[in-house]
Length: 236
Ligand code: CDP
Image 1 (cartoon, protein in one colour):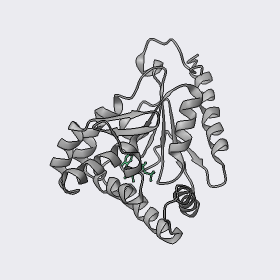
Image 2: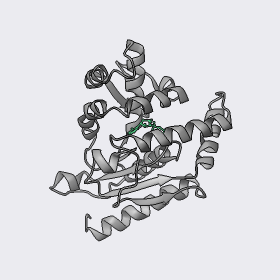
Image 3: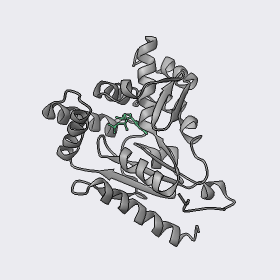
């Protein structure tokens, strides 16, 4: 696929970042991965890093409140992504980190500033030519503040609970809509209320409410905004 922004000398411009932040189950991961694919850009699922860290801590018997030990563990983590799968110490852990329990644990440790700091450079290292699409909670606000395009992607809590429900049932997993909605609201509240890199729409981010959009429409909207940016900033 043809990259949208070739041959620039400034690495921040030759490796532009599209940052997609938003709450749980908004679909930002799916949208981000498809936008990356369409542009031929790299893709970083930052939430997976928090999930793997929580999983590694639990496997190693490190308490999810032990900020110092968690930060040390995060720095030493042998983590890599390949073909949509996440590997810890060379073993695939995708299934283990995608359950709701793993999401809750990730959200708990994500409130710890030292842990976030320990993961900062690891996330920034994913920036590479011809560009990066990344999704999370603080991609535009903290990790890539100079992102060329920042999007706050959301949907109503009810719609997000429905999407998560369908996703879990589709994987043959047990799911209860009412419990999912409650968990999702709890996680939103924790992610938004924490002092370290809270979930928020920054002033320079555009709002994409996908409550009544399907994935293809959401992806197209991001691509349209990107083309507009490229045209405005004469990147190509
Ligand atoms: O899939 P979902 O949106 O529910 O979660 P995720 O993106 O995989 O992230 C799991 C948890 O990690 C979130 O609830 C956040 O608390 C945390 N997280 C974060 O704090 N900062 C990020 N950049 C990404 C995730």
